[in-house]
Image (cartoon, rainbow, N blue to C red; front, side, top):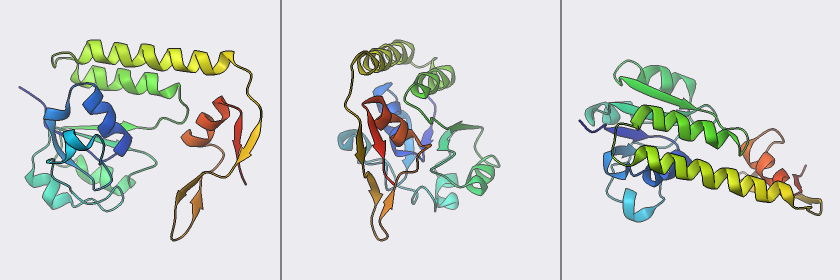
Amino acid sequence: MSPRIASLVPSATETLVALGLGGCLVARTGFCIHPADAVGAVPKVGGTKDVNLAKLKRLAPTHVVVNVDENRRDTAEALREFVPQVLVTHPNRPEDNLALFEQLRAAFGDQPGVNARAAALSAACSAALARCRERSWPGERVLYLIWRAPWMTVARDTYISTLLAEVGWHSWP
């Protein structure tokens, strides 16, 4: 039986599609917009911080993917009341993607092609990180804006700031 997956994390939605699980998506947030051709018809259940739990419950997911930084704790707790598998993610550094791929492979590896795609994603991620670390990058201070109204930037100990550091960029302030 195929899983019925709700993704409440934009980056996880893209990863699920890359693993070949796009056809298993039954719900997403309004921010889960990529890849557009794979998620366009998937029902939206609100935003990352304001999930419509009643609508999500009606869609009867067997799995939901949440993230410590993207979703509210009370939402994750409420999901446990009606979703058999709540997968909590929290990548803080680029290399944490390897554990994320393994977490999703462990949950969905019984689906055709998922194991091979997870291995390929892990290999590609490892190779990209190795290439970044082999080079000498000029240090730069950058202002990386993640939101406007109000304007917001990334904090130092976040996924984005550690990714920027891989190429010698350091977030400001």
